[in-house]
Amino acid sequence: MNESDTTTRLPVITVTLTPAVDVSLTVPTLEPGTLHRLPGVRQDPGGKGINVSKALKSFGVPTLATGFLGGDRGRWIEDRLDEAGIGHQFVHTQDETRMNVKVTEENGRLTEFNSLSPACSTEAWQSLVAWLLESLQKDQWITFCGRLPDGVSADWYARAIQAAKDIGAKIVLDASGEGLEHGVQAAPHVVKPNRLELSRLLNRDLNTTREIVDACQKLLQTGIQTVVVSLGEDGLIGAVQDEILEVKVPKVTAVSSVGAGDTLVAGLLYGIYHDYSFSETLRFAAASGTAAASTPGTAQPTLVDVQSLLSQVTVKPYL
Image (cartoon, rainbow, N blue to C red; front, side):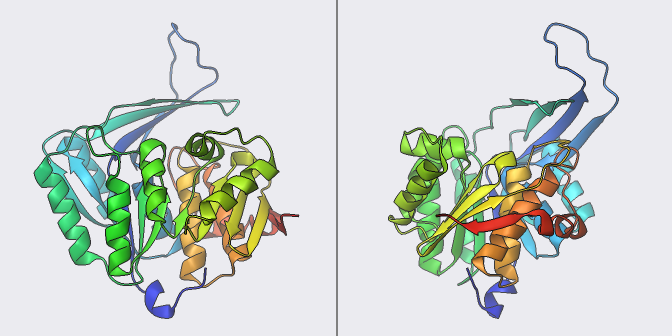
């Protein structure tokens, strides 16, 4: 996963087609049909690509967020990104950006209420594509993250990935459902599904490490260069053509698992940015996702937070 110095000077572009204001709540136990009094409510700019940009900024990697935003919530997200010093170039839409509610119980169980994404006009889609084609440079990294909005063609990610590859850009895909199914057909450089997403993609159970490794190898045969499967508290599995690694993470007190996978993606890009080996890139990515689970809402860990966990992450070849 080594890249040239020229590559690493370019900001990582993150594409979020379905951003949101994430409202995070914590309760001792979620009991349907009863009143819950909340000690506090947290709001964060959300959406998978935006979360990646937030983590990259925290890690000191240049980044630029794009996608669709609309209404008061969209302006609120842009204001928060401005305050954080995160560059952005969103296409503005007429419809209000959605709001998602995340409820975490004291035992770590997460319940999510995600609004449906608003439809975007043909003009908005054309504006986004035009900006990407004009702005992307050879060897620049771009991430396509999250589900596709309702009403958009299921192969949009695939077409966008191919257009980016034609420019010579490098692509990370972290999606689910039809977006992942069609997107992998364009062979992005890196894909980062979780176990469930990969299971659904291949329509098979993935209960053992061997089954996950076989699934990774199947994707590598399609031209994808790197497959990283996130396994939550069980760590991750990373695969390239000549190396398959198992990564185990330390047990931490989970505050919120929301966005941990997005921070893991940022950790992968951090390793690429700093020309780490594949094993050390995976180590940093795993520590990043674990550190994120210890932060409230979709707040991002600091570089120091991640570095403090590196020695507790184990990386070994799959045998």
